[in-house]
Image 1 (spheres, rainbow, N blue to C red):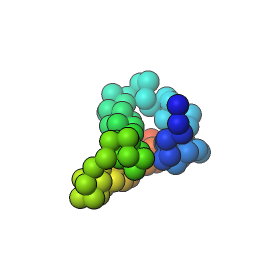
Image 2: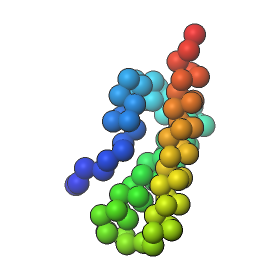
Image 3: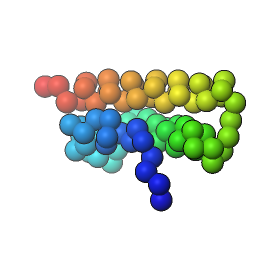
Image 4: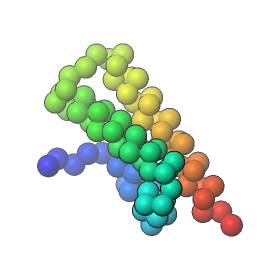
Length: 82
């Protein structure tokens, strides 16, 4: 299996434990987490020509991934503050 860049554990290594906790106990976070990984893998497949796509579609996939990553980060920060 090839390495897929932009995995959340690589993007937010300081939040790995919190992501595991939220993924297992918070339905909203679990949905965001799964959506991000689905979008990230779609970008990876397109970038490596496993599933070639148009430049416009690639841009949309990347935008979706960025928006999800931003939402996940904001959620993580809100859940780790006292």
